[in-house]
Length: 134
Image 1 (cartoon, rainbow, N blue to C red):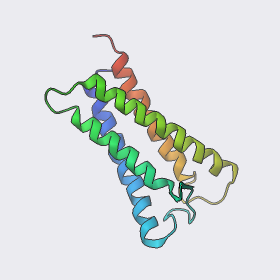
Image 2 (image 1 turned 90 degrees about the vertical axis):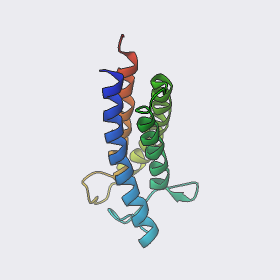
Image 3 (image 1 turned 135 degrees about the horizontal axis):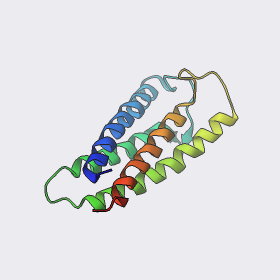
Image 4 (image 1 turned 30 degrees about the horizontal axis):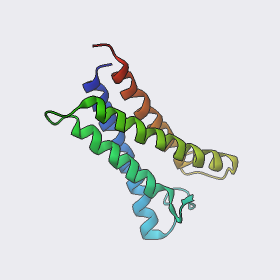
């Protein structure tokens, strides 16, 4: 996969991640509970969705910066890989906790699982672009 194509896909997925985690964050701020399942995992005293929003936003900004002239796409892809790897560890940890303590979820699976899927895609797609021979 070409780097430019990979970065387009990353932009789309990270935008969806921003919308998803933004919705969860905004709902949590307004109501005090997760809008989709009533409970929210916390990290350092804050809802996990706040951290997810920050990571997806950083990925989105990095992917959009790649379309500006004179940007080093390899460095931006490496930044995206680092952030998405942290997202995989972060959402993977909370996904495991939520799966081991099952309850009724509004979206069938815990919200952290959906974030984990998006982080995995955001990791694999640019990695393919970076590894592609010129």
